[in-house]
Length: 105
Image (cartoon, rainbow, N blue to C red; front, top):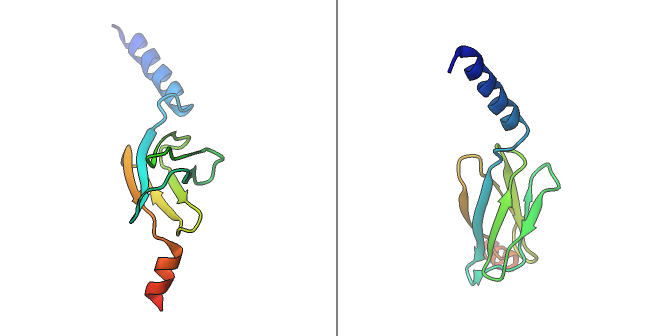
């Protein structure tokens, strides 16, 4: 290949990458001390992009931003925000709000 073809390929991959063709997909599990949390909400911070966990607390989310943070929430539990730019699989353990408040007293 000559220099023009390499330059063209580089430009093409740069163009595709800038539009998120190579967007990151993250998976994980959300649980508490009692076990998995089905129906927990996972939202990519700063976007409308999100999902919920399945019956076993598992989720998969295609990110819009490769330097993303996720907010994980579930009714009755303390929400968490985690940076996921360096990983493709996470395990989140949410704390029960009541249990957390009792420890503070």
